[in-house]
Image (cartoon, rainbow, N blue to C red):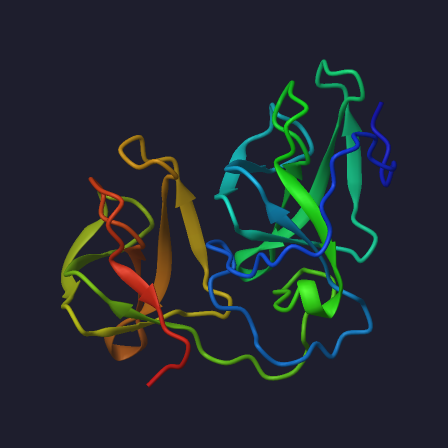
Length: 229
């Protein structure tokens, strides 16, 4: 069965929990949404992958970690029910993440009644919908930048093997090319939650990629700045 917008059947739901941060969305627009749509979002209860399609067999394109916020693409979340071997099956929800990309997140872990995310809704609980999400602000979007906390190499593409001679030093400010930032998630086996490469601006109007964490440790290289100097 492959039906959109089926009401999800499993009974565990917690409304109105204050999950604000999102490692995928990073810094989203802070202005009140000018969209006619009301944002709808989910608090991530446990680390969960984002899939290219509504299936556990689809390619993994990103990941959320505990306490992230996932934003639905529509006010009435777009869902596809799947038979995952449990009594009530599972639902995949279409979400928007960095740079307006979209993907699908299961409400429950594969073959389990353990919820991966819980429902939230409205401007209060879902304050920062990004591009592609219901309620995304149409007004000006502030720049997104990062404080460089540790020295880091700069890469020509989002891959450890694409190192260049350039680098950031401690105390530098790295500016994202887009808001929310354009990022690519990597399944780094040495890191608990994988890693993300962020596209940043460098000299002469060029762009490059910087990893959010060191390749061999969960030590952040980049720290989000609330305001860009």
